[in-house]
Image 1 (cartoon, rainbow, N blue to C red):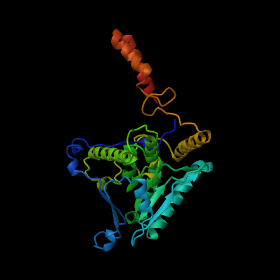
Image 2: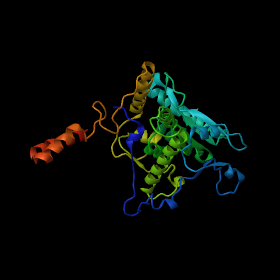
Image 3: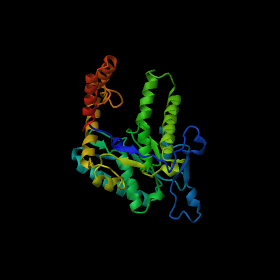
Image 4: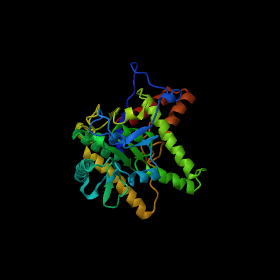
Length: 337
């Protein structure tokens, strides 16, 4: 089944030599506060240009805050929004061309004095699909490093893909300065309007952002990192199932124990999601539950499912070694590639 690109990465964690921080009891020494914007060409020479920054208490921007950033009108501040879309009809070639064009436009924007680049997938339509936000931000981040212009701008991601803590951590770890999960906010708004959650929208949004921030604290603490500024762009992840060519081209050579998907497979998965979304819109049908978090009959495979659980229960209830072997065979079989 098609997967989000986020699912091909796992967190790294400190062992023995660098004890992790307790994100609950030692939260006092941790911070998600950051200053985003252009640092300037020389950070060693004091200059008023270094002060042209925006202070954020955390890297999650709501829609109103992003709108303010996009329309900021003050000397020394300039924002541009770049679409992270590709021609659906061209497939892999279209995605590759779009990524190359995106990187070039980002460099041109920096040359024009833009210090806030917003990478957005909002304007998708039937003919244009979204480039995975993680791929887009990592490609731009590493390209700007290559041309020596990364510190002259901040990368803000406006994406409907962002939902989970891991999504936010990956985007920040691969170079994003701030995030706007607009689809998550839209879902919260709908849940509030339908009375499916007994909260007003402002409280629901605040709770969601707080949950993401708490999750970021926990992930950072696993590596003993106390501030988001130290975590941003650190790439403290291991790839699982990415080809070496893809990793070297767009993810700065992030280590992958095994080879795997290329840009072609990423484009195919993106197009599957794109096609499903527009098909559901035309027929007004709800998108299917793919069973990513809990078992569904026609969803993702899970080692723990009704079959394996009932077999294990019978084995313990009857004291049957035969049933236990049936259980282990079922679990081992589902875990095999």
